[in-house]
Length: 384
Image (cartoon, rainbow, N blue to C red; front, side):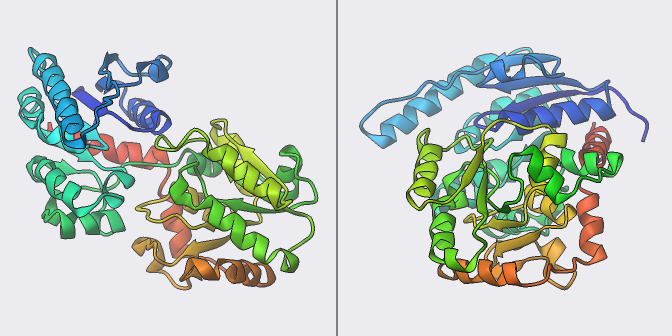
């Protein structure tokens, strides 16, 4: 489809800036003509981005004893902001990322700015909410014209089932992986030991624990499980913790995990700096086993990147990736209960690596940003 110019208002409150910048970067790469206005509460994070203009909405903390009153004040502030913001503005598309329940009340202003409203859930903004919250949020999803997620994944299933949204509104997942693009383009040939040397882990057996610093990744439970079976694992064991992002995490949480490792005399490395694709590739390649125990998940680029890098994966069976699991055998060693994690890790260590099917690999390779951004741009052009 030939590129054409269109205007896009991208609303991203409470969203990890790194992922939002990726959306902007890759959409601009496939169509430089798209005119993007970003509305965010963290404008300082986007000074070096390709966005055409940035508008700022501050969300000051509300310290009120009564929760209902706190909620009402936040709602009033957001309502007043959008009542002023929308005047004289028109966009071909308004795209709301990680929409919160307050967006329900400013819907008339969103609609006044554009006849096309696209909602983009990220996963945790839906999957980790209680039914009362989802009941309120459902009003925005029903009024939206399109929902940017796959109908056949855990998130899409939940939106259809619990928010009572028709599947025709779900238009596909537009998020991609820069690491997938990097690997497919550059065909790097770094070995596991070479990657370990770069990270200062030469001669170590590396178990990577989770993929961000959110507490729902259950790092402490992983540490405890590994400690229980430490005698059945290599003496040169190192734990690797990628903790580059996680906006809802307590500031002290990373230090708590470090203390947990130190108190058990477990050698651990914590990565907290954002990494470009070539560095992230080294982190994935330095891993011998990836342990993924978070409570819920919709679509994990990180899990798919470990598949692409041919690593052993220990994974909670309560997290379903229907598209990948359609191709037998399972690409991971399943953990049915958190209490069984230690034993599964030991079993995975002593077992041969699972031979991942070509169908899984083909799906993983299709998840790079180049393809996903092209798909997003084609969709946006098709509706304007």
